[in-house]
Image (cartoon, rainbow, N blue to C red; front, side):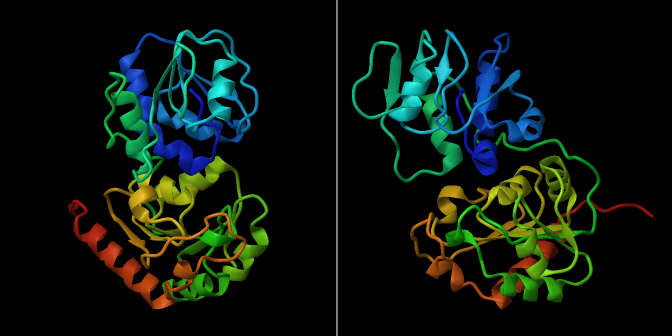
Length: 295
């Protein structure tokens, strides 16, 4: 299976990965994906081996019985998988390929989780799109995670607005930073956490609340059912947001260039007040629905 992308991409493919595991319980299943995702891959409990692979790089594997393209619709990803000489390849693809390839037309407007489940189900492999939860990494804490970073400027809400939210939410706030994001995090607040990916996932998975943009951290919150407020700009939450759970996705109904260097105009329309209102609402809902404990 090829999914050589980022953290959020991996987590939206969890139902598809588990569908493959259930369909082939005795098979050896290898996932070609970036090595830095190894800790998260192990938490999915559907893959036997991670084959470290950069995006659209050659895949160091030979003659699989079945290759599955969970990366895209080609042609590069299709060609990379065909180079492994599989007996059969399942993929989205345009155009004609040889007899080993069984391809579907790419569905343009479909939630990312459903897209990959659809690919497999059309080839007789059952997937449950709601089977995306990860096992809790620990007890829920009182920490509030604010993650200001994102892979592109278009999805990065201004640091000064995150700082205003952090000040309003009080001392339980921790600011998380991915590689190279420490300076950005310090502009938001003093309590900065910049550890390993495993540290970040555990922190988000046990937090009381998460606030961030359309990033991998948002998908970690979804996987662990951590209440979250998610800020969407160039891409609508109907395609990449949480489908259910204790989450609020804020979006002002406009789309744009997700690879732009500057914040999306729609993202900039989200105010500090909106985020604080959504945070209060999702916390009230999640805490009112939590099971009661005896004294």
